[in-house]
Image 1 (cartoon, helix red, strand yellow):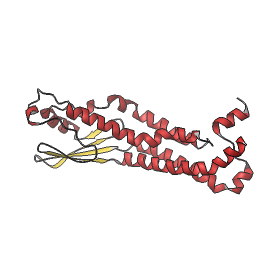
Image 2 (cartoon, one colour):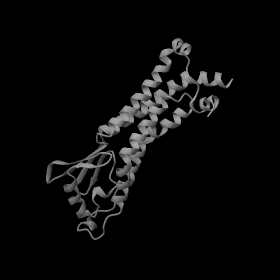
Image 3 (cartoon, one colour):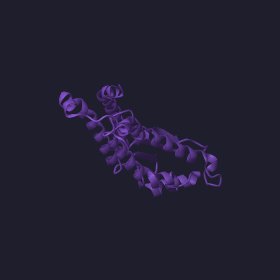
Image 4 (tube, rainbow, N blue to C red):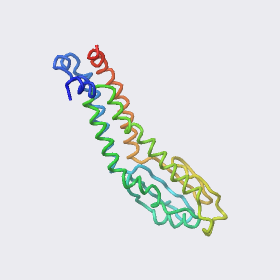
Length: 218
């Protein structure tokens, strides 16, 4: 690959004179994208979603935390209650997503870090999966909650007492005598913060490198 083709793909390289003339304008986008990539990786080890089930027989409530690849908390107890209304066990939701999620987030984070070395519009393309990831996670969660809540087993003991429903993925919900409180976990908050930092980094990236790209084309 020739030098011209390489620069067309990854953008113009910065000379020492250009770095000396505007050092900070090149450092800021690098810091933003690098920090966002690290936040994405850190989010892997934290819960992405939390739900509390409030019921008369459980004064302290039942809690479940959803990590990218597993569930923790009072999963068995909640599955036992859901059985009576005909809802499938929580562990059967998003099995494929959970098997791929950790590797996917690692790749997404590495793409963001790789965008540091791209000095043209392709940096935004590499960063796009990370920007969209929090929304994709919530949409996938909504899909499974809707699928489980609207496909109840008609043979369940309390099937006639509960109509199909869609459990809220965020906020308050009520099913019969039970109430649910769903909230974003610290992992999802970190991933969302990373998305915002990426957007800031791409703005600074464009401001820093666009003049160089245009000069190179000229």
